[in-house]
Length: 242
Image (tube, rainbow, N blue to C red; front, side, top):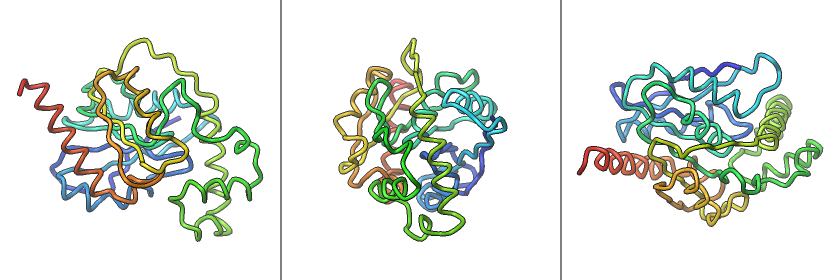
């Protein structure tokens, strides 16, 4: 398993925002963030996975990403969406070099809570899986129905949901980096009341709720980036004592 950071754009001499995509997602998910991140002085780099063994786990992906970010110049931040949030949290636990100044966990239930998808989805037909994706929102119909891209998306989604199903976290200490937890007000898969559970693993976590569903961060990237930068500024001020 290898993780590669793909630079999508943003401010050239900026703080780096490393983005980990959702289940079934890829670096393409964060292309819409380029303008918003540049406006906030951020350079966005999204994670591309190569599963060399044909099978992986959240822990294996976190190991790979921790190795990839080891030499990132400071300051940098880490953001994960859904499955990506679980990977981001596990990555933050593994980092031995400069830690992220902020870890942002979006649209993800904390460890110990329901997975956020019904178990029957894992064994659903392609048509059933596609209907599940439609209910979540965030995926254009032309992608779902495309003769090449649609089956590829569903196959990757099955693999990624299986990672979540097999995930058995063992947190032995709180996350050391500052944490912000973001959710969508109308996200049926991860209700906002579940988000506070992350404070078990990050006691000082900031909670923010945005308008929208499971894909709120891609519907309103400018708003999310503004709040992210505000959280970064606050945690930096706290760390420096004022």
